[in-house]
Length: 167
Ligand code: NI
Image 1 (cartoon, helix red, strand yellow):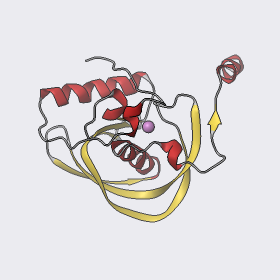
Image 2 (tube, protein in one colour; image 1 turned 30 degrees about the vertical axis):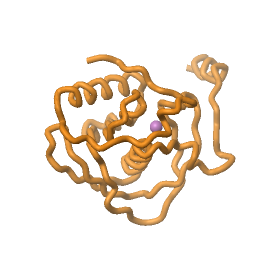
Image 3 (tube, protein in one colour; image 1 turned 120 degrees about the horizontal axis):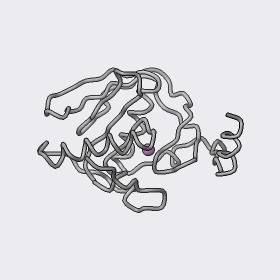
Image 4 (cartoon, protein in one colour; image 1 turned 90 degrees about the vertical axis):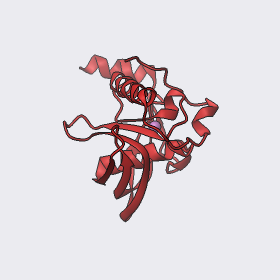
């Protein structure tokens, strides 16, 4: 296992469309392990393979609640329900930037798991939001392209120091 380098804003790879995974071989399994490790170290809720420079349709998600931890290979959102609502979002490729993005509150996603078995997840709220954000990455779309205008907040190093002082 290894921590991989997270590609950040301005890196052209983030705008590229990822390719379907055809075979889940040892290289894919190693990539998935590395993606989890990289995401956990950065305290992220989700990470797409493109964010570590690999154009494969693979997403990892962990909401740190003990149950919502998934790898989604070739994910497809097959159903959305209800209205779109604004969610506060950030992204490991855009450190210290947050904005509101409208997402469906409920989605169904179908994908393959690490064993190549088909899985179907009916997701709500943060999990649904996270799945939509990560699936966008696979099509070269980043949250800042979808944000509600005027909602971008940039946290500076100074703000971080201040919040540390308060604690
Ligand atoms: Ni992201």
